[in-house]
Length: 193
Image 1 (tube, rainbow, N blue to C red):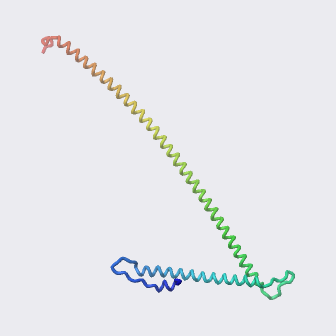
Image 2: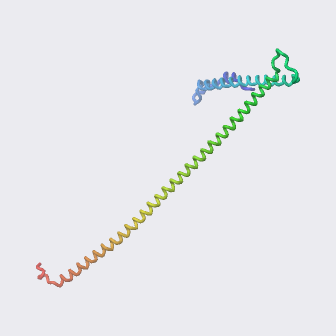
Image 3: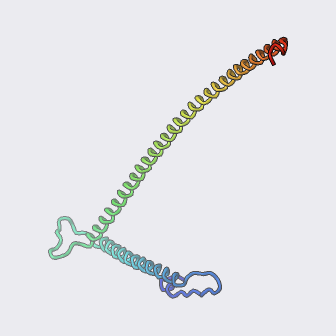
């Protein structure tokens, strides 16, 4: 059974109770839109079928009508033979096909051009990103080397400072030891305590 627009219009849906479901008004509105589009499509199809039948009929008449000899002019007052209608129709179809092919070719060439442009732009973006990445990496590497050199300098400074400080304290301890040994030889009464 073929489904028709009237079948869609007359279709009844049962109401759902105590469960979630679709809003019946919303479903009806949507089905009305479908029916309208469906009827338009059917009307267009019928028109096209009629036009094709008309062109086929004209083409069949042109094939059955004998062509007049070239030296015999067409009788005055008669319209052009039916073959000219089919020739016109064939010419129109050929032009339509040629235009269609041209549009397809233009579309493909435009698509190819856009794809090529997109690939070129993508390559430029990737190239720029790689260049920027290399620059940042180089800058970070330079900063790392600078920081490592500074750390080495600070460690050397710390080592030298510790040695100098140790030497200074050891010298002071020696002075203290020599002072205490010389003062232990001096009697307390001489010091004046």
